[in-house]
Amino acid sequence: MFTHKKIIIVLIFILSLIILGCATSYAPANYLPSTDDIPQNVFGGWLTLITEPDPLVQDSKSMMFGGEFIAVDDSVVYLLYDSLYQIPRRIVSESTLELDQKNTTAYGLWVIGGSLLTVTNGKFLVITFPLWLVAGIPAASGESIRDRYETDYPDEIYWSDVNKFARFPQGVEDIDLSMIKPFTFTNN
Image 1 (cartoon, helix red, strand yellow):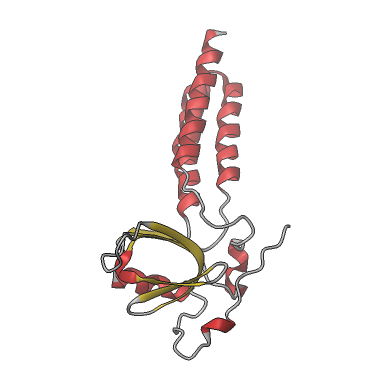
Image 2 (cartoon, rainbow, N blue to C red):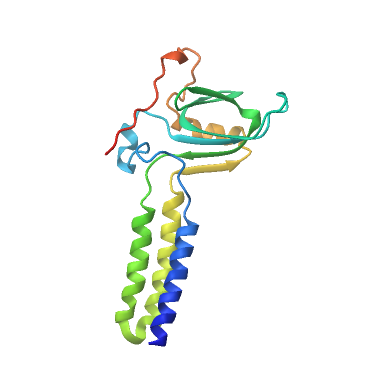
């Protein structure tokens, strides 16, 4: 009986590691498409920016902005949430772009379930339990960061790489910005 308590404690510890190791999503629940629907999606990815205080504006503070990635040009990042935000690139300290929904919970449940089922392997548990962990934890962690572009102090290379996931990767010079409408959330 004492061995079972140890196994349960170890499993709870592993579950905590899996949950803590997963990246959180900043996007609203109904915004990100499934992986299969990305090619047909007409909206930009979900971009979350954290800014430093603007040295050119007195009493400015760090801010966090999140919204649809509309476009980026040499000096401004365009985000759309309830309205269009134009954030100067020079004050962006962190950027996270998300493209699709993740299956992290399902992966985590598979790891936990498979690990629990190793109890039925008898003495081979000492081999199968670690195998589930060695294969499952990196798989769940990898799923949480798949199709996610994250960096501190984004540079020209970063913006060039993620620009293809904007709604208007060609830029907004010839577009009436007041006509851009935000994504309409639906309850599914």
